[in-house]
Image 1: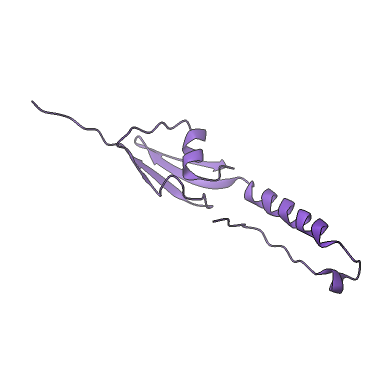
Image 2: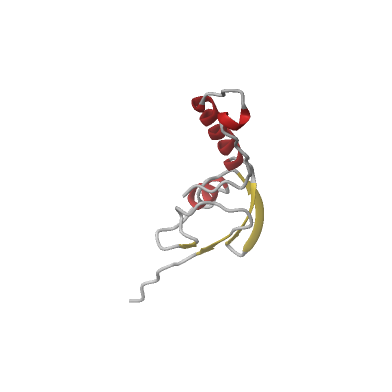
Amino acid sequence: MFTAHCSLRVRGPQSAGHGLAWSYLLLLVTTFLAACALRPRPVTIVADGERRTLHTEAQTVRQLLQEADITLGDLDVVQPDLWEEIRPGMVITVTRVEEHLEV
């Protein structure tokens, strides 16, 4: 799922009156949306007893955690899921899980 947090008003070649080729228009729109997607967004990470807010261009929770140098253990739980798309204002929580065996 791709979400752009920008607005763009596109007028077709008929209304623009300039005969702009649709392939060129598509290139412009694609470039615009890519630039919007890469705009740094504020995100809060709660992990290891700390709460920190940072601005990121990461696209997914997994990428954000890598960018923040947060290493996950095999049993750790992350909310929202690692493949979720980053949204401005999102709070990501890492819950550390340890397994202890008693003999």
